[in-house]
Length: 483
Image (cartoon, one colour):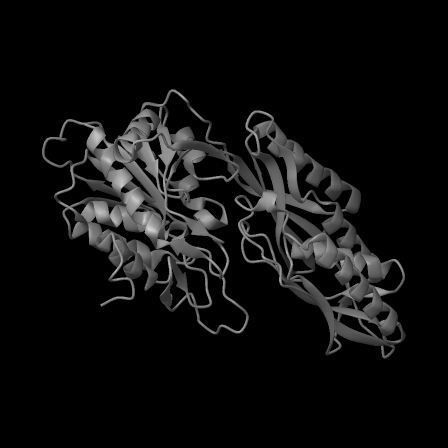
C-alpha cells in the first residue's frame, strides 16, 4: 500500500508515487527514462528513445478511433531539486518522501516534482488503460526542461505525425492554457583576481534568509525579494563607507527559481565591524518595511567566519555590486492587451565562481520577441561598460495564442459538457517548451492542462490532490471528442 493509495483517481496517484521513488533531477534522467520506456514497451507501445533520453511513445488507437488524427501529448520528466536547510537527503540517489497534508501532497523537506511529474503520471494512466477511448497517441516526454529546455531543443520530430498537442505543465484545473512567452538565458561573466587578507582584517558571513522565492515566471509579479540583488544592496551600502571584499560567491537553485536565500563570506577591517553591523541592521529594517507583504520573514545578519586565504579586491567587489544592482531584474513590462499579464521580466537566478570568473545566470521571458532581445541588449551594454562578457543559451520562441484553434474549441466544448460552464482561457508569462514544438512541427495546435500546484521549484511545493480528478475527467472527455 502506497502513501497515496487511498486518493482518487487511483491510477494517477499510483503512478505519481511510482515515479516519485525514482530520482529524476535535471541532467540525471536516464533512470526515469528507461523506466518509462520499459513501462510503455511492456504494454505494446512503440518507443523511440534518443541519446538525450527524450522519449516518444506511440500508443495505438482504441477501437473505433483507428482513423482519427493522432494526438500528441507532452510533459517533461525532470524536476527541480531543492531542499530545506538541514535536510540530508541525496536527491540524486533517493526517492521522495511523500505525505498527505489535508488537501495537499507534499514531500518531506524537498521539492515535490509535481512540475512535471503530474504530466508523466497522466500519460502513464493513458498508456495503461486499454478501455479508454482515444485516437492514436504520441507521448513526448522530454528531459532537461528545467535547465534550458535542452530536451525540446534537441528533440527530433521525424516520427511525429500528430498536429494536435496536449501539454500537462499547467496549474489551474478550470483553465485552458493557450499561449505563453518565450525566453532566453544568459551568463554575465565578470573576471576577478585575488588578494590575500592581512591581520587587520576579519571575515563574516553575510546572510540574507527567509525569502519566499518561487517560480521566476509564475511568481515574478508578486514582487518577492531576490536574495542575490539584496545581498549586493547590503554590500554596496557597506562599500560606500568602508572597505569590503567578496570571496567566492555562490547562490541560487535553478534558472527558473527566484533566489530567496543567500549567504557568503565578506572580509572587512576589524575596526569597522560595529559600523558595518549597524549598516546591515539598518538595511534589514528597510527590507522588513519594504517587503512586509511579499516577504515578511526576510532577515539579514552577520556571523563571524574563518578568515579565507584569498579574497577579491575592493574595486572588483564594487564592480560586482554594481553589476548585480544594475542588471535588469523583476518585471520589465506589463501587457497592455491583457490586463494583469506580465509581458517581460528578468530574474537573476544564480551566481557562482569558477576559474577566476564570477558568473550570474539570468533568464529573460517575454511574450514579445523584440522586447526579450532588448532586455538582453541592456545586459550586453552593461557588460561592455564593466568589462564583463555575456554568453547566451536556450533561446526559446513564444507560443502565440490562436483563438481559432480547433483543439482549443474541442477542449472548451469538453469542459462545458462536463461542468455546464465555459472554462477560463489563459495566456501566461511562463515559458513552456511548446514554442519550440510549434517551430519544429508546422501547423501544430497546442493547449496545456493541469491540477493545482503551488510554490513549485521550492521545498514548499504542494499538489492539491482534490483538483486532479477534474483534470483527468477533462482529458478523457477531450479524447472522446477527438474522433
